[in-house]
Image (tube, rainbow, N blue to C red; front, top):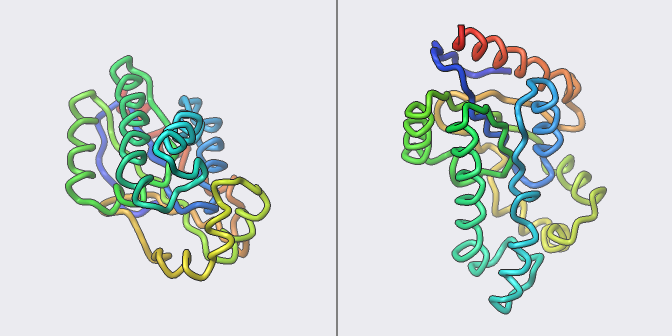
Length: 207
């Protein structure tokens, strides 16, 4: 499902695939990369070893993603690293599919405006894909992947779910992918549909 439509003149795209932990955004990002042929940059893949090392250096838990130590000292560096890698690819004329929660970013009007302006200066357009899910689906995926960084969430599930808003949606225009276990349309079909829209939009921009 695509929300909003924007006349497009650029030939490059920065596609941000965002959502909560366990929403399935990494899987959706891989599918998007495969469908478009655009390179994939996943925040966890790029930064996790450094994140864990830095948290240990700060006398924290390397699997922590909840504390102020992580939020104030580590998270900003993760996103700075990811976005710099995105900008460098766009500067080289390479479109990018970037995967990360982007929870604070996609609801921030100023962040979205700055990012769109930066994209525009590089001859690129910004596309946000929000991977939606529900609490039971996310819990099932987190349990299945059995990652240490999810231990706190699963052990304190009610507290965690109470701290997030499942009604969160990005500001401005975005593409919505329904990845609840009960979704009527498989994730692959939904991502393929969005990928086709983006491929047409940006191939036309290059014409």
